[in-house]
Amino acid sequence: MINIQIYDTTLRDGEQTPGVHFGPRQKLDIAKRLAKTGVDVIEAGFPASSPGDAAAVAGIAEASGNGELRDVTVSALARMRRDDVDAAAAAVKGAKRSRLHVFIATSDIHLEYKLKISREEALERIRDCVSYGANLTREDGTPAFDEIEFSAEDATRTDPDFLCEAVRRAADCGAGIVNIPDTVGYTTPDEFRRILRDLREKVPGDYRLSVHCHNDLGMAVANSLAAAECGAEQIECTVNGLGERAGNAAMEEIVMALRVRRDVLTRGGEEMGCRIDPREITETSRLVASVSGIAVAPNKAVVGSNAFAHASGIHQHGVMSARGTYEIMKPEEIGLTANTIVLGKLSGRHAFADRTAQLGYTLDAAGIDASFARFKEIADKKSVMTDDDIRAIVGEYLDSREGKYYLETFQIQSGNHIRAMALVSLIDKESEEADGGNRIVTEAAPGEGPIDAAFNAVNRIAGADGTVGRVELISYGITAVTEGTDALGEAKVKIRDAGQGTEFSGRGVSTDVIKASIKAYLGAINKWRANRNEC
Ligand code: KIV
Ligand code: ZN
Image 1 (cartoon, rainbow, N blue to C red):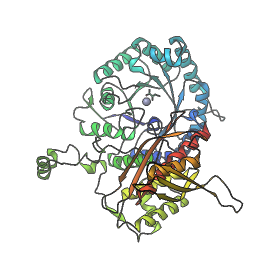
Image 2 (tube, rainbow, N blue to C red; image 1 turned 135 degrees about the vertical axis):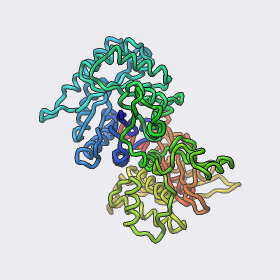
Image 3 (cartoon, rainbow, N blue to C red; image 1 turned 30 degrees about the vertical axis):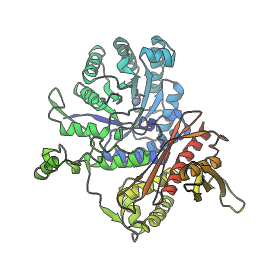
């Protein structure tokens, strides 16, 4: 059987999804889950992009070096610049197996309008940087990277002869893996096959081919599979299809297509497969949805909540007689089991800690204490607590953990004949009062309704009213985590920095929808503030 390597870029391209920001500890939790799922390579981040991301990549590299993440290569992204390569080398130093992923755009439109360089200059940068990375050593004289991957950004819109020249140059200078990205999701399966065959024929050599497909026309998975059929040995993808714009090829779809259609998805008649354990797919998808704050669409292939639901009477009848009538895979194959009620208000801290670990979260003692306190508070009001409730509670804790502000109290006045008014008090975790405690800051603000008034009060405290910068609310929604009148409400908000255009998301849970909304808004505001401090 031909083994297709799964290169997971949830932590890098996935983090480029508007509104998504992973902190170092969140990245480590996801990396652990990815390793457990069986991915071959984890693209942990882009170390030159920020000190925070460099630290996150270093944390994942160290976890792989000390055996916490087994059998994975840790990859770091770099532009075609020596300082980016140096930052990547420093970040992956602790990894058991490391990879430099260095890229440059090769299409004329990118060269002319984005990089403003000629084709010759691009080739020269490839020569300089790929050989620099390949020859870079650590203090002890060992190579800084075990493997070098070269990507020709926008390859599918690149002049085919120039693409060959760029790949030849990279391979000659030490790139053992050559990645062909369909950066703007433009190609089709037939065209992509032609591009890859042509490349292999014209540039023979000792390198492995990889593909990286975006989903702008909904063909990312089909294009990736077509590439595997004609020789790609590595597929780059993300959990739940996260990524820039319409996202990347979804890992779970690739894995299940390779499995379910192994009869036709072959290379020259030989079966293809990968190392992923499909039974881990559901849990991995849920963890990524919870940590990223990007919910999976109900009709999403493989992991959507409707993927195994049968609504029409004819379908239900068929499935009851024989599941194969309308189901091409079994829910158990992807680890989807009935959502059992696991804990209740009498459950202890130990049982709660065990369950959070099973769900893929690594919480330290303070994290368990804080989440368990919330669990107890909510379990008191709610008769049963499901895994989804626990995910929502831990997700909210993870979001709030790294922020400056924490909700202390709020009071809202609202009615059909008065303007809504909110009084909000936040704990400033970065301040210190004379008695050693944190400062509590209070502001009042009016608004179009209770939520708007509360958000305005938070803006005044955090300086998002124009004092530090200005933010715009771009989306707000509240959903019930589980069914019933005592359900937990999960609020999600997305905001944008009006000047820089960067987006941040947050979520909050509570049986009280206003409290959930303020917590969600605070989560986003905290990320916005942290980003302002980093810039
Ligand atoms: O889409 C793309 O081209 C990329 C590269 C950095 C591989 O993400
Ligand atoms: Zn990409």
